[in-house]
Image 1 (cartoon, helix red, strand yellow):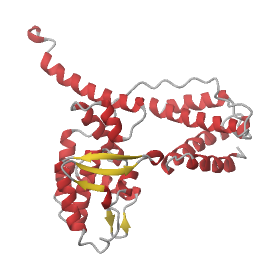
Image 2: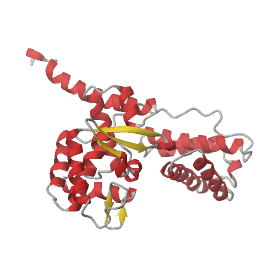
Image 3: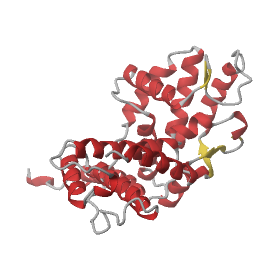
Amino acid sequence: MRDLDPILIEHAYELRGAGKAERSIDNRTYNLRLFETWATASDSPPDTVADVTSGQINRWLSARAETDAPETVLTRYRHLRAFFRWCEREEIVERSPMVNMREPNAETQPVPVLSPDELRALFATTKKDTSFLGRRDFAMLAFLADTGVRVGELVALEIDDLDFGKIGTAKVVGKFRRERTVAFSPKVGKVVLAYLRERAKHRLADDPHVWIGQRGALNVGAVWRVCTVRGEDAGIKNLHPHRLRHTFGHRFRAQGGAEGDLAQLGGWRSPAMLARYGASAASERAVEAHGKVDPLGDVL
């Protein structure tokens, strides 16, 4: 589509003005580019954004459903719908081609989480490294798993945001610049304090950010690399920060934590996302219950 590039630039400015995170903007742009690539290779490619039809979008979503998870297809649908609604408001298109389209079905699926044994292995292998990086990574992984913070919130965290009172807390700024307070356990607080003691000896100790490396504050990519490397050391493939956030949500619900408290601590506003954690915890409880009930009893 010959006019898509300038429209996407304008759309990105609109999203930034609405407080959307850069990662969210990147994801939306990526999905629109995916659709453009598919549409360009189709039998009747649209010449402009205004030429896109509902049939083309439906066929693209059907094609994505062959390889993507249902929830991923739903996300792609919603990104396109929001884009075309914006195009309609800006009079780029006369009418959104998705105005009468129905959302794809996406049943609530349990989230992928780390098992207790995987968590133990991750912490044990990282704890063995007593270097500065080892202490930092151990503290960072424990903090991620205990608080459920997003990776962007983690890297933005400053020392003054930490409070090691009777209940350890940290102030973070989440999506749409919403500030909230998260909590961490005394065990995790002790691990973080041990890291901060080593951090005080670092040549960049004056940096206000909690998590630092040889070049200063860590960025999102650096945290992803830490998770990948430390995960592989523990025998966990493709470990990433968001999986630790999933694990936090799952364990909080599985151990009796209330949905409302989880929403507040994790900064979740989507009922669908909270339902996923409830489904994940419910699945675990059902498996445990099966062992206690023994349905076949003395008939086998």
